[in-house]
Image (cartoon, rainbow, N blue to C red; front, top):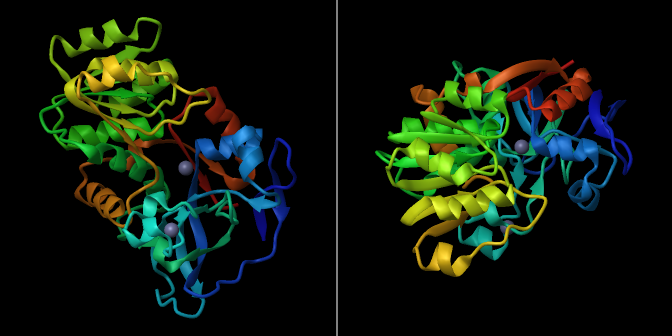
Length: 341
Ligand SMILES: [Zn+2]
Ligand SMILES: [Zn+2]
C-alpha cells in the first residue's frame, strides 16, 4: 500500500510502498477514511531539531485520523464497519502516571506517526483503547480533526469560562477551536491574538469577539479590546515567549492560564511579580485526558455547540502532502484535511 513516509533522517517526505500492518494483541486494523495535517507533521517534514531527536525513519507519518474498523488482533472486539476517531498518544498503562489515571502525562507515551507508524496511508493499526466510535452524522474529516480539537477542550478545562473574558494567543486550528469552545461555554468576551490576518479572520468566524494583531504593543491592544473588563483567563496556543509573558501580565489577579503552545525558545517569566504576587495559576496542557477530554469533545460536536467543520479550510489527497505542508507553512489555512489516494 502507498503511504506518506519519512524515508531517511533528512528534510522531506515521500510516497512509498509499505507492507500492510498486522494488528497484534488488543489492536484494531483501520481503513483510513480521512486524516488531517498537524504542525507536528510540518516539523517532521522540515526535520527540525525536535524531529531529528525523536523520529527514527523509515516512518509512516500522520496522527490525526478517522478510520473504519476492518480487522482486529486477539482481545480486540470492536466490529467491522465501526467508524472511529483516534487518540494519537499510545500510553503504557503500567507506569505511576497511568496508575493514577493521568494517562495524558504517561512518560512512556508513543505517538502515532511519530514513534510508531501512523495514518497517512490506507491501513493503520491502533490499540482498541485508543479509538472512540463516532456517530453517523459526524463526517470522517471532522472525526479526524477531533484530536487537535481535544487539545483545545483540554486547555479550556482548567477553569470557569462562563461570563468570563478570555484572551487566546495563537489562532491556528487549536486556538480557533479554543475560541469556539470558550464561546460555547458562555465566555462574555474572547479576544483573539495572532500576527496573521488570515488566522484572525478564521478566529472571527469561530466566534472571537475582538481581534488583535500581534505586534510589540500587544498588551495595551488586548487591554483596549477588553474595554476595561478584567481578563480572567489566557489560553496560550502560540508558544511565542512574548505571548507567554504577555499572558502573565494580562490576566487579572487570581486568574488562570493554560499553556499549550510549544516554543522554539524558553520563555523567561517574572515569577515573583507576575505570578506569585498576583496569585495566578499556570497550567501546562499536554494531549487529552483519557477518556474525559474525548467525551467532552464528542459532546461539543454531537450537540452542535462547536462547528469543527468550520475549522477545516482545505482538502488534499494524501499524495499531495507536500503541497498541503507548503500551504500550512504559508499560514493561509485553518485545518488541512487529507483524503486517501
Ligand atoms: Zn497533531
Ligand atoms: Zn504510562
